[in-house]
Length: 174
View 1 (cartoon, rainbow, N blue to C red):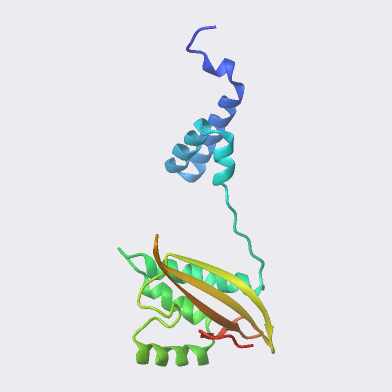
View 2 (view 1 turned 135 degrees about the vertical axis):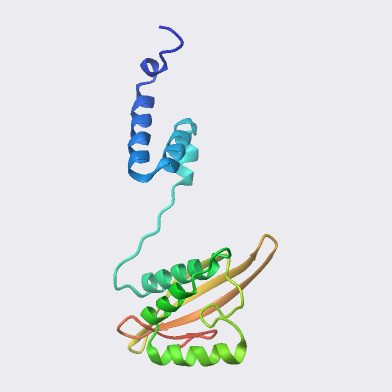
């Protein structure tokens, strides 16, 4: 067998390259580069790199995570922040009464009321905190900065029974 017939010695490689090509056609050229890079990566590295995020329709923690993820993405694009999207997200996720109170809070404090800061966090986590009366409370922990200089803010987000955010505070509603 000559040294130019590598595919005959490694039949799995041809299948992986073919899968990479199909991904590239369906998802664009950048996926092809990633798929080809994965061919050369050891199996352990590929397994460690995989990560998943899941949610359930109607679940309070998923709804708040969806809102904060999209809101932070809209506000955090420093080259081209999307204020229109951030406003639309507020309209969709917040009760109108809370949106009015939040705007007044922002005017008094000079900060973004959803984030309780003037800047955008580097990381965030969302945790279910259980039922509160007819609503549900979710804890959002925002991490600002990086490395050794980080600051965390814990927010308590109250959802009304229909899934709209009725309050965001720094103390629990319990």
